[in-house]
Length: 159
Image (cartoon, helix red, strand yellow):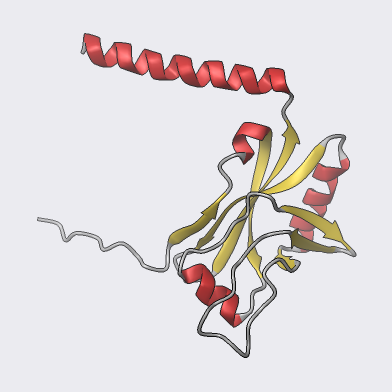
């Protein structure tokens, strides 16, 4: 019998932007690192964060995560952090150039999709180059999702 794999405590999702794929058509994704303070990392390890209202932007040749919420860590009284500060994202120059070209097109934006710890225990952010969906596109996505659910039910019943 093969030994059972233990789940890695470092590799876990902290925050996910579930509405992003509903409100935006994601064309490309990119994993990037996040510059954090110690109390922010501890707060993330507790699983407390919100990236639903945040976005990424290129300013002065650097990539920044704006309006993300990481609550203060209770045990870090003297060395706390600001909850909604701008956080620098770490990407290579080539990737930054690709992102700059991507958002240069009309209607494109950078949205965070998921914040997690990788297998080495580093905080990572998955960002997507996306275009906002119109109401009609959202309805089509909803119809397709409903049809897929109904189709799966029918196939299950027929067995």
